[in-house]
Image (cartoon, rainbow, N blue to C red; front, side, top):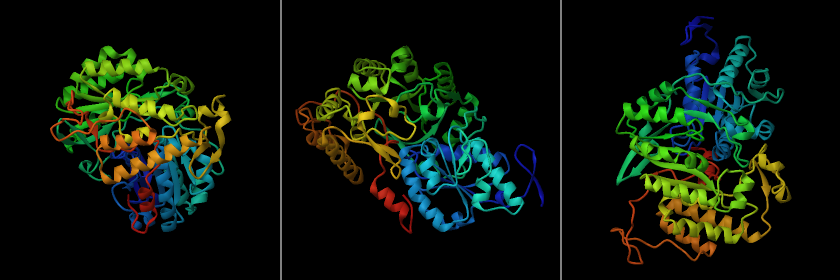
Length: 512
């Protein structure tokens, strides 16, 4: 075979798996953003002499020829919504190319490894996925060189960090290489999510300054895989990725870190350097309420550095539920952070898990009334009022005494342990609320109208007032604050996909 050299100068052989398009990286959903999981995988593969192709099925239909050409198809599933869509896409991928090695990689791939390997997957990768994915590609390339290029033979090899039907490797938790994400294989950034702020609609990108999380919230999917570990991404890597996206048209960047303040010193270093390099660029990040309480003295500086809003997994306003989930904060902490962020000129965008075994009808009414009373309607995407507690395999909740009485078995097809609320009306309200939000999303309905319907369904007594174009509401008052800045993608990582999304992936003209 003809010798070639990889990007790091290492001599390699021109195996079939190194041919252009022999590796196909597939994303189905990443919160409306240009998929970082694919860009990271593409970076390490291209740096090692491979020539992958990418398909983002949230933006383009399935490319039948690209699928048929691939020998390794790697489907990114970093979140529950992506997993549900990825498995639907896998039916089409398998039908088009039954001989390829089909790998699922990402957080939710590892949590659901048994179900995936019993179904469409030949291999599953979790934790820090990039290095094991490269090792899998190299293993398959070696199999190809010896004429053993069938999926079972290639994927059955013992590859560190890769779980298969014949090997039970653990997740890969080594520090990732400092490689800049390779975004050139993906659709242009201006076709993805935008930021709406101060009457403007601008292109938004995303970067990450850390991976994993140091905390062990019981309902979170990260602890079963990372076990409290997190890794920082070098500031130079983050800044180069940001520079490329800004040059491509991005005017706002979301930090994709599970918690930006896991390493507050590193986070502030990155934020300061980003502002120094691109003073007109705004950003947002995600952080725990307890971190925002601890670091409230940094909020004004973060605003001055370009932060527009902060996302925080509040989850509940019921202190008992917060204790069960081990969130590390209370309702009063949430109210204090809301006051602190507003005082600093920042928007807090809370996320919630309102439907749990421990929250009744009165809890849903209380949540909606809390959102309305604290003037959060334009800072909370309506989908947040419909999320049902997701209990994936491996969840720390499975061993909690408060959870055990409600469990009704694993639903492998939906990738979650099922549970029933003691009051059937609560489960019915969740289904009704989800239908309201899905219909509103399809129709492009403003959030306040959706919240009025959700409030009516829950029997809430405090409902959003209707406003006219001038900002006057039906009570004769006016908005006291400017509309909260928001990203144009309203869906959520732990939400079930819309039926339209699933149907599109299963059709002959598959695309989302």
